[in-house]
Length: 254
Image 1 (cartoon, helix red, strand yellow):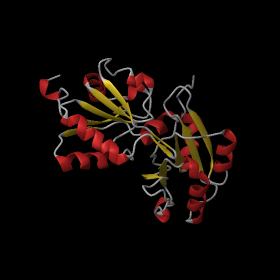
Image 2 (cartoon, one colour):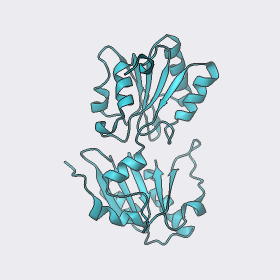
Image 3 (tube, one colour):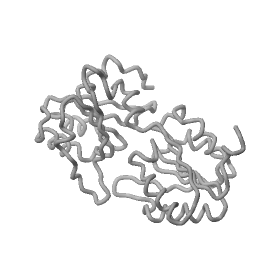
Image 4 (cartoon, one colour):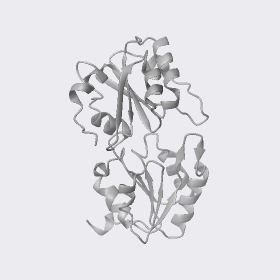
């Protein structure tokens, strides 16, 4: 790799770690993680990925769990700026992709505001990685001609979404961070036009050896999720493509 592609002191690298499986890291991500002076990482980064961090590098955990944040977002942005200004090679390591519900845009804006140079390294987002490992193609000519990503959690904690747009036929909806509000999401989708019999799935710890896949319908997903003890992190997928999971589920859970 050329010298221009090496991690540079005083830079921040917003790096996507993918959905969990270490082998889904990009080459660029793995290269930068190994070169970092400090890695600022989220809750969903597994130990097999963190094992790539140099023994001489500093690790800073800034993870967020439901109702419990290790560090506020503004403080994370300030930390990245401080570390870069110390001349360190900073990797901000995020699950999935930095720019898909990863707050990477907010952090990039903070860096631009004070003139800190940065690079964004895309990652396999949970929607595509988790659905593939669950045997659910997000698009299919017989089922879905479009796919929509949405989040069940907004900055102010509300869940005020464009429900009519999400309830359109012949599309797949992937809901990030919606496990605690599955019942509300299912109710709203049905209220805005989707049949209660619409297939829906929850995939917990997708791409990892202990992945759980729960397939149901909008009518019964919430109750089944509760009885199965499904908790975050999990992704919700809605659409008739979910019916393909039993036949296309190739991943062997160990």
